[in-house]
Image (cartoon, rainbow, N blue to C red; front, side, top):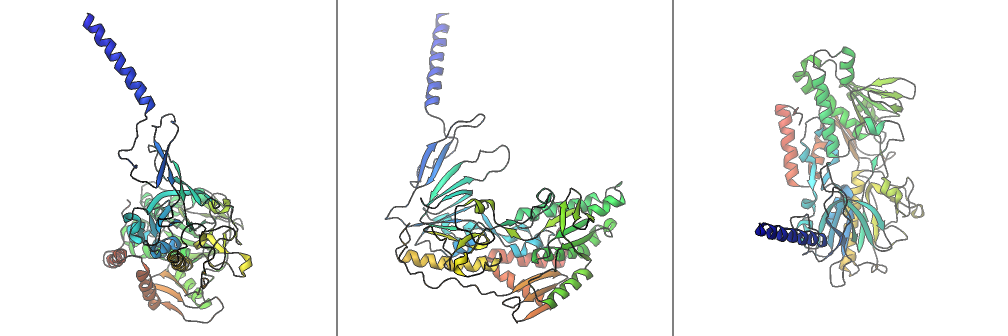
Amino acid sequence: MAWLRNLSTKFSTMMKASSSSSTRTPKNTYPFSFTFLSHFSTNPIEEKPCVKPIVEYSGLEPTRAHEKPRVVVLGSGWAGCRLLKGLDPSVYDIVSVSPRNHMVFTPLLASTCVGTLEFRSVAEPIGRIQPAISREPGSYFFLANCTHIDAHNHMVHCETVTEGVETIAPWKFTISYDKLVIALGSQPSTFGIHGVKEHAFFLREVHHAQEIRRKLLLNLMLSDVPGISEEEKQRLLHCVVVGGGPTGVEFSGELSDFIMRDVRQRYVHVKDYIRVTLIEANEILSSFDDRLRRYATKQLTKSGVRLVRGIVKDVKAHKIVLSDGSEVPYGLLVWSTGVGPLPIIQSLDLPKAPGGRIGVDEWLRVPSVHDVFSIGDCSGFVESTGRQTLPALAQVAERQGKYLAALLNKIGKAGAGHANSAKEIEFGDPFVYKHLGSMATIGRYKALVDLRQGKEAKGLALAGFLSFFIWRSAYITRVVSWRNRFYVFVNWITTVVFGRDISRL
C-alpha cells in the first residue's frame, strides 16, 4: 500500500500549491481583457460574500498634450443627443454617459401606449446619432449614472447600471474630462403628493409607455372575466390622466381614439364601461391660444373624454382624492404635471438658477468653474444675466445642443480644447432662443398648431385636420434617422388599414 500513501501525499501537495496560487492571483471573471485600453487604469476591489472577485477599472485618465481633448456628455435626451450629433470627432474624443443607450422621441411617445406606433419607432440608438462612439478608439459610451462631479479636478464619478437579481454588482469608475456638458434632463414633478410614485404611471421613457400599454390591456382582459362586479368593472376600465399640458392632452386623445376605433370592435362585452377622465387644476393647454384651447376642450368632450377641474390631494391604490374631498376610482392612472430637477442636480455644488436648475451664463457655461457647460431641462440662466429661465421643451433643449456643439467645435479648432485652456478664447455670440410655436394632437385626426412666438404675441393659429397633417409632417421630419422615419410612416399606414396592435407582450 506504499504506492497509495505516496499518491495521497502528492495529491495533497498539489492541492495546497493550487490553493496558495489562487489566493495570490484572483481570477478575472470577465471572458476578455481590457488591458489593451491604455486610457484605463485598473485597481482590484475587495472580495464580498457571494460575489466573485472582479477587477474594477478606475476610469479614464486625463488626456495628454499630444492627444485629442475629451468632451464628456452626461445624458441622452434632446439636448445631449443634439450636442453629440454636432460634435466634430476629428477635434474631440467623445464620451457619453447615460443610464439608457438611446434617445426617446418624446412627442410620439403617447402613440406607442395604444399601439399606434411600435416602441422601436421612437427610440434612436446613441451609436447611430454619433457613430464615432462606436468607431473611434478614444470615444466611448458608458451605461452608467453620474453620482458626483469634481469640477475642480475635472473628474466625473459614475456607477454602472445593472438589472435583475442575478447580475454583477454595480461598480464605480471615474472619467477625467477636458470639457464637461451636463444634460441630465429632469424628472416628473409629484409636488410631494402622497402615493403618486407608488401608484401612478409617468410618460417620459419607453419603458413607461410599455408599462402603460400592458396595464391598459390587462385591465381590458380582466374586466371580461366572469364574476367581476359592475363596480369593479367600471373601476378597471376608468383611465385617469392628471395634467392638462400637451403630454396629458395628447395621451387622452390617443386613448379616446383607441377606445372608439379598436376597443368597441374587439372588446364588445366591455365597450360601454371604458372611459377617460382628464384632471387639470387650471385650463388645459395653458400656453396655447384661447381659441385653440376652446376647440381642444370641445373635441375632447366629443371624443368621450371627461374634463375635471380640480387639485389632487392624495393618491391611493384604487382611487385618488381631490382637494374638495371627492374621490375618483381608477384602473389606470397616468401622471403628467410638469417636471423638476433631479436629485443629482440638487446635490451638485454648482451655482443654481431659479427653480433649482444648474445656473448658466449667456454662453451656457456654468459660472465659477472652468470647462463645465449645462443644457436642457437641468439648466437655467443665473439671475445676473437678466434672462428668464426657458421652458422645459424639446425645441429649447435641441437648440441649446446645436449651439453648444458649434461653440465647442470652435473652441477645439482654436487649440483651446484641453482643460483650463479656453480662458482667453472669444466665444462669439451668446445663445438666443426664438420660439417656433407649439403643436399638439387631440385625436380623431385633429390637432392644434400655434405658431405664435409668445403667449401674448400675434401669429398663425390653426386647428382641425389641416393642423393634424402639419403636425405629422413636422414630427416625421424631426425624427432623427431615416430608419425611424420609415418605421413611423409604416406604423401610421398599418394602423389606418389594419387597426392598432393590441397584443400584450
